[in-house]
Length: 313
Image (cartoon, rainbow, N blue to C red; front, side, top):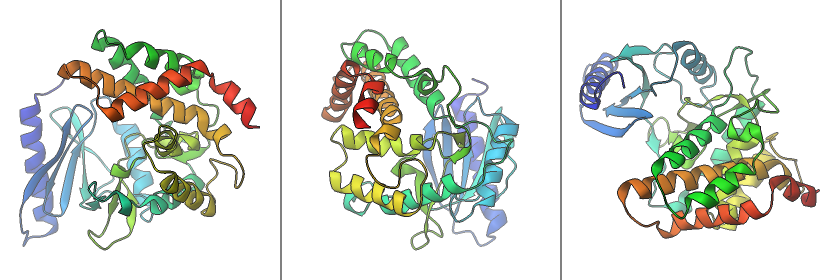
């Protein structure tokens, strides 16, 4: 790493405070660390958020992603400045604060809003200089960490499921379609209301945004549904809203799974890989949810994705 976590966090907090005070001289003040992980550190000061992006972020690619967010303010939360700055060897950006989804109120999860935003994003023109969507690369990194985690009974079924996927879904070959603007890492934590509390829902986090296969953006809720972690009613609301908004990732009617099967399997393997790696590192058993995605991988390995798609036709 280019810097120790302490100096980075302290510097980011100071930058967030300075940016907040520049926006609002009568700042009410109040700071919080929203996330502090190797792939991103996020701090808040009043109504301003500062984010240190992953070490592998490049100025050119991040700037192109920030430009997309700035040009689509009704879909993506726009940055306060579309140009990142350097801090301790990390690229830093500044954003207005938005109210996140309440994790303690699953019945109020904005599935329809998330689906409509995705459909609008997928229908938006993609500039030719935009990098590829990083979803498959992120899944591949999770599996690489699993291989390094050490022995565990759940490693084998996850790797078997991963091995059944086509090369593009494992980031080992180009994606078959790169003409659609994609988010790359859609989950409910990627939505906020802005202005805070009463504003519309917007997508956040441009780190994985790019051109690619739009079905990847539907894959996490599809995988949760297939694993029994998302109620059928919520999945139906999400899928229906996406279709009604003209989303191109799945057919307007009929069976969506020929399009969703490979991405959903990849996200299941990614989720399981992360869960097992964390359990090994903590020296603890898998919890019920973690075991359910590992079990799903075990089932997936027995039926290759291409067979599922053939049966679905």
